[in-house]
Image (cartoon, rainbow, N blue to C red; front, side):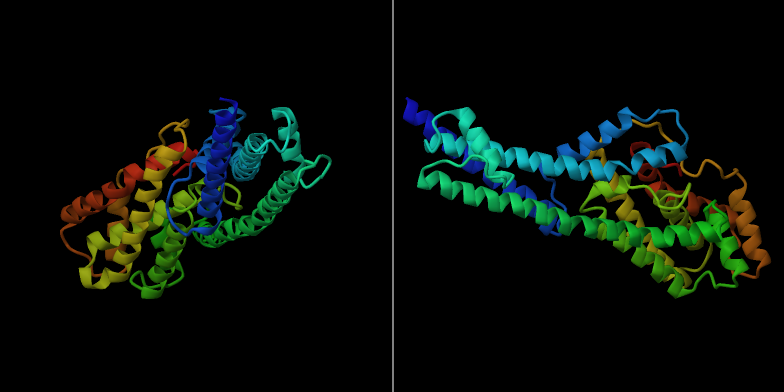
Length: 341
């Protein structure tokens, strides 16, 4: 019976190490959207912990400062979970192989090897071999930590360049109305392919990074009072508006931008729904826009000589339908991340 227990301990330890390697490879090496259980719990714990110390009625500036801690806490918890898992696995293996005489001694020997402190090493050749392997794994965790964090931060920095750009050109209030006004002020063609290709590339960057690491959606903007979600909403609204009032042939670039943008938002909303608790309150999509905003924008386009569809009501109906395709997803992300739209 005692031999069977030791054998089971060895098998559980080996299985746990496989889980560890699978988790590390998924989080740090695989460019693929596949949920990892350890990073999932680390993300949930980080969000819940930060929300615990954030007043639900606080303004966005206060929330923005608190949210800045979500990613660092996530990284610390992920590393802590990996270390604990590896230590427990080698504890079971050391005890199961009888490299140490007791479970407590196995635990301390495992911690000694994993932390590379070397204050306790089993005297048997098998125990020494396992200590070398475990020490190498401990160093690998540290090396991988310093290699994957810069990549995450680079993804956020690339996202923030366009966020700051848009907020500066809309006086801190990006909406489809202010975006079009900014284009008109700078004498940019609203159908300029280059503009929409730049925003399409921005959305693709978020798709490639944030959908594989949803925790990045919680990282706030480095610009005071700004956020990437409202930037996304204003660009999607602007593209939807142009698609509803202009000829289809003239809005191909805007259509492609809106398509990847809407898919990105929809996928993120789906992932966040199962990755983080919804602790905030629902924030209506673009609540600062008056009901007649569409009329004002439409009339301004006409005044600027833009060849719009003369059927204003048909344009309004199309715009409303296009907007509805992503509005609910924007609201869900806003509620989960506490980022206002």
